[in-house]
Amino acid sequence: MSASALRRRPLRLLAISALALTATLPAATAAQAAVPAPAATAQTSSASSASGDTATTYRPDAAAAGWLARQLVNGDHFESVFDGTAYPDQGLTIDAVFAFAAAGSADQAAARATAWLARPDILSGYLGDGTTEAYAGATAKLLLAAEVRGTAPSAFGGVDLPARLRSLLTLSGRFSDRSQWGDYSNAFGQSLALIALQRTPGGAPASAVDFLAAAQCADGGFPIAFGQATCTADTDATALAAQALAATGRSAKAKAGLDWLTAHQNTDGGFAAAGATTSNANSTGLATSALLPGGRFISGLKGWSSLVKLQQGCSADPAVRGAVAYDASGFNPANATRATAQAVLGLSGQGLAGLSAHGARPSAPTLACAAPAARL
Image 1 (cartoon, rainbow, N blue to C red):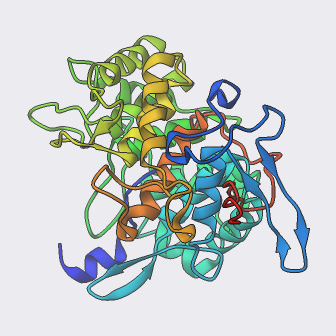
Image 2: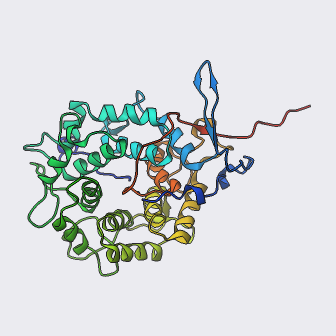
């Protein structure tokens, strides 16, 4: 594909993960060993000052979301660089919106990001014009974001997102792109479409549920790409498909997907990307956000613990405290934003099916760290 085509295509990376289990998760992290254990009723505290809100938190998910909010460009979006030029990254911005809702914090930042996504130029650049260009995965992801935010999805930036998405449903049950650049729809978009449409009055189309269910590999996992000669399961695709099928009543298929995830968990508790062996925060965040709501508490808590170990704690530079490194090789600002956004779903113990921003705190808290001891 040409460089110009790539610039016109929506970014496909996904965040992306029904039941909140934060009450069962430890309040302090291993990476924050210097932090005294907080009381169960005081995991987050805040104070007002002349400079504004100074909320602090001991919760790993809230600390990660707070750091993420402070990285937003102009306070409302993220960008990606291609050939030395920065382009708006709507997909990553939506990942952050999901993260803020999962952590129940940074609601002001989430509101600004949602308003940015609804701008006509930003909207059309991500979804396509709706006629010659219309992208299934992007439309599904934005529809879910609107639902999570409690914004009317049928009039988001002037676009009826559920209707647009349903118009991309093919006779096979696959949600496909309508584009001069080809069809890049995949299991990520199909899963998001089912999760998002299941939350609408009409529910998810049965043919679309059947299509995703039929794509399951013999080993129980799910591939990213459909129609391959050899069905090769992928961690991220399996995590999303398991959530989508659970949400649409295909419990046996969802269980098989969770079985595959637990069988492919690394000894450090994390999960690796397809073709790799080293755990990374992105895949671990998505897998954990499927395992915990799916009742796989042992595997889920192992995943949660591995994410905690990647989080930058009180011994790190204050500017990066709360962020989550991509892997154990160390913190890298080039990939930390996306890693943190996707890790928050796992750190919060929430999946995408029931995700909601309702009741989220407005502030973007910083990690609470013990004050240095006074020197005599």
